[in-house]
Amino acid sequence: MPAHSADFRLLFASRMLRLFACGFLAVVLALYLAALGFNETRIGLLLTLTFLGDAAISLWLSTRADRWGRRRTLLMGAALVVLGGAGMAWTDNFLLLAVATTIGVISPTGAEVGPFLAVEQACLAHVIDDRERTRIFAWYHVAGFTASACGAAGGGALASALQHAGWSVVASYRALFWLYAAVGAALALLSRRLSPAVEVHAPGEHTGPVVNLLGLHASRGIVLRLSGLFAVDAFAGGFIVQSFLAYWFHKKFGANIASLGAIFFGANLLSGLSALAAVPLARRFGLVNTMVWTHLPSNLLLMLVPLMPTLGGAIAVLLVRQTISQMDVPTRQSYVNAVVPAAERSAANGVTGTARQLGAAFAPLLAGPLLGSAGLASVPFFISGGLKILYDLALWKNFRAIKPPEEN
Image 1 (cartoon, rainbow, N blue to C red):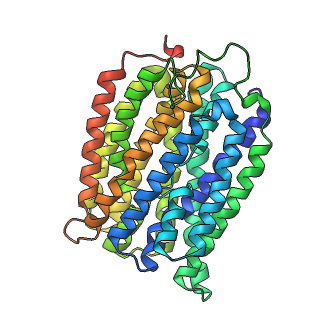
Image 2: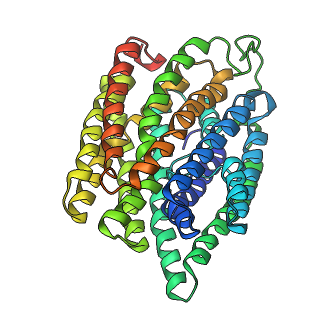
């Protein structure tokens, strides 16, 4: 175990607990909103507000975390999780739900949202060697996706069990939002136990004064360029967020909530494990090459999913896709932390992460009406795959010559 092993354990535990909660919410979120009587357009609007709120909160907190304190920032994020979960469970009023989804750090995708990822990765990169960064980030990714997989299965199973026990559909889903609020309280306890070693506090680590609201100085140019490309990738991914995939499987093939939980348990587990395969590839071929050349075939497979005539066939193609779809994630995250100064890592992670959240924010507005049309319900798969291919090619063209320290 590397130095500061207690902090490693706490950061990994926080990641797993948080992604477990994200996993079970992503399976039921769109179904819950539909059970409350909202149509696909309103569901798409609420999901867009979720993305926008996550983006704003993430940008505000992560770009200040290195100055305010990383542990303090994580505590603030945990408080918002409590408020968001309680707000979603407490009301069925559309306006109040819009407020809860906007401020509540709620994930429609099953993946990470809010300031946590940006700040925790800065903490990890601060206390590990450059040569170990991609490996640690890969395991961090695996830990999260394994937890998300268990959350998807557990949430679907719990909601199904409650319904069989006599609970209404809405009540069973609300129980999961209360559980999400409880996870926020647990995250606060974990954040309080982190040591000062995760903070930027050594003299001379800052590269210069902060000259803009993004908390960036020396890394501003490269971070903004990466952010533009990441926004395109995330916009494409917003067409097939996990909540929409669950809704699509339910609508096209009649898959029930327990089956959906099992599907996304397998998908998320394979996604997490795929990150480990990225480590030796990155060492041999480089971070950018690994990002691009593993992402391209996964996007082609994505476009095959709606062409399958049966539930089994669609699930099989989706699972094959998941075996390679996430190899770009730990490599992308490692790359961002490698090419910026230590004192700008939280900000750089926050800006690039926020760009992704903003990119994903508007796609549900377009995807929702498409899902509501019988003849167009599969179109989001093709839009997503095609845009992601364009992103891959642009990323390789613009950044293949910019190497992280360990590749030099």
